[in-house]
Length: 170
Image 1 (cartoon, rainbow, N blue to C red):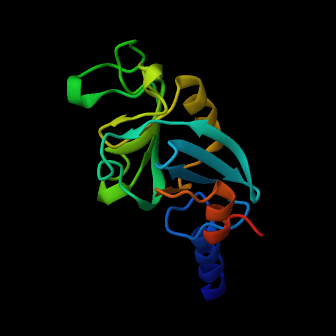
Image 2: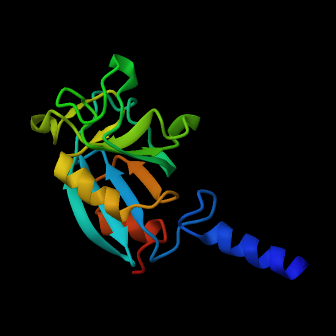
């Protein structure tokens, strides 16, 4: 019985679907670089896709650090202004990938679409990471709950950051 419990704990603690375990090379991983307003999706030890993004109006609005995806939603509801998901005036766009920054359980900070695609590439958000709707829809399909999100502001390449985080082998 003890062996079975140990095996289950071992599997859960290293799985990309479990929000506590470490990220391993091969696991899905997201890097957000506020310096260049881009998001990289890493899987199988390599950068698979880079997306243009919008981040916080000021440096402190988009928190930096390592977080975990805890919530995913299609056509998310915008609570602040009571706007139903799927409506053109919804500023969250078509997808929500929420992560646990500042102990907010994935409901305050996220990577989401936008009804203002012209804002992509700029520092305009209240803290979230905006992508074009078509880009966030694509990313949404690649990212399971438990995926790690690393947010930084640096001139390092995504490959350099990935190597430092242990998700890309040199």
